[in-house]
Amino acid sequence: MTTKPWLKWYPSDIASEISIGDFTVHQYMTNAKEDRPQATALHFMGKEMTFQEVYDGAQKFANYLQSLGLQKGDRVAIMLPNCPQAVMAYFGTMYAGGVVVQTNPLYTERELSYQMKDSGAKIILGLDILYPRISKVLATTNIEHVIVTAIKDYLPFPKNMVYPLMQKKQYGFTVNVEHQGKNHLFTEIMKASSSEPVHVDVTSDDLALLQYTGGTTGYPKGVMLTHRNLVSNVEMCGEWMYRCQYGEEIILGILPFFHVYGMTTVLILSMKLASKMVLLPKFDVDTTLKTIDKQKPTLFPGAPTMYIGILAHPLLKKYDLSSIKACISGSAPLPIEVQQQFEEITGGKLVEGYGLTETSPVTHANFIWDHRVNGSIGVPWPNTDAAVFQSGSTERLPIGEIGEIAVKGPQVMQGYWNRPEETEAVFKDGWFFTGDLGYMDEDGFFYVVDRKKDMIIAGGYNIYPREVEEVLYEHPAIQECVVAGIPDPYRGETVKAYIVLKEGYSVTADELNKYCRENLAAYKVPRAYDFREELPKTAVGKILRRQLIDEEQEKSHLQAN
Image (cartoon, rainbow, N blue to C red; front, side, top):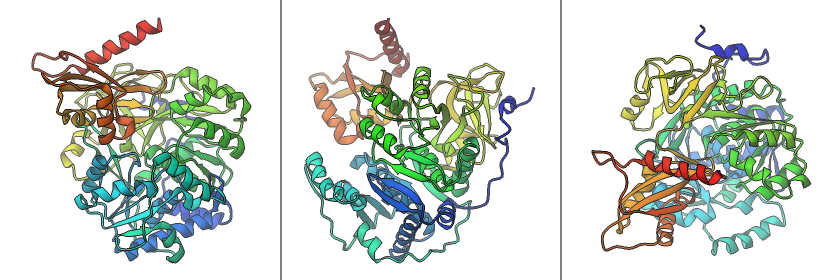
């Protein structure tokens, strides 16, 4: 029996091994600019920019970073939604020899402070409305410079005039930052900085990105991804999507670039294909449907919640979605009925993929236009090997037996930033152990049966219970707590907290909700609180989270029937 039974399903259009060039991520932008300088590189809420304009913006940003003293290997944090500034800053940082630290705009001060301290970022670029939050963590971090931008900076007239008024109404405040001292304005940089190409000796083996992810400890870790890691995964993606044409595609950019999935399948892939990306700063069903109808995207990488939201829209039939020819769904399991309905409506293909932040991120996917198995995460991508091992050992398990999925390939990370012990724990005999349980069938298709032991995946976001629990434990009224993912028809899972209060104390769910919102990003905040006299435990006192999850699943099953 071959150790790679999946190769028999590979169509002739997809090579099992591809040549991956020895080049950097930002070379994709240089190539696209040289080949198609006046073609549209991006569309953002009515504003369009050519590849030449985006390239020039990236070079201006790179030159400015160097004028601030940026040295090769220094970290630059980007705390933005999908917008033109995020594109120019991402590639500009790399042109300058910097390492990008993607930072979720939803982070609270606590989370932001931790990531900035851990990464050692010297410069941060953020939205004007995030400036108050950023300014409060400066004293506890290594940040020397804050670059501020606004959504309105890249909106066409009259949207650029109206947007600040909408923003003030939504957030209750406006922010005015002066271009002086530690503070810098992106608009001023674009006016004053040189667009002359910056030349730094960056190799494919140099670090390109620190992408933070959680883990069984609950503390976010910086995943070290080199240019080679990211380029490898984008090249594999291009091979997998073999019907995509250079310079002809339109990619819908809803997946946030501060997640490696959106970064690879939209931000970098669009440069590889020299094709237009249509950027949306957040997922909103109405806006998404109108955008698809008008902009005619051909590729729509997304998460199941996005496809579910679109299918549930009451005016869905009003919009033309027939431009979509391919979608790879990630971040959470894709329900078969969602796949079938979405394909019927669009006429395109929607397949499930699998990966992790540590793998840049994709390792497996179903074939888009060829043989696929519903319910499976598909087969390993080109240049990628995968196997199922007895958990905690290097004993490979037979076909059909459940164990821990492990992978090998050029997209696998270098390790965790400043965490050699945790890095060593996930690598064995050259294999990266994913922590996900699954099996392989006789045809080489893989299945995930349980996510990392405790991780909650809600709406495509990874949530680590211990991080939420640590915030709850800081509340003076809480004696014990445990957080678990419970079934949710829309988000896949949602966060529920089980709580035992200290004697003599009282607190309501509303009060805890307010407290959590002050200390956690919104997607991590529990949606339900269950106050109990005691929590189920093992003989040695460990709380049985799994028992609580089983109770919820049983409840959900009974309600469904």
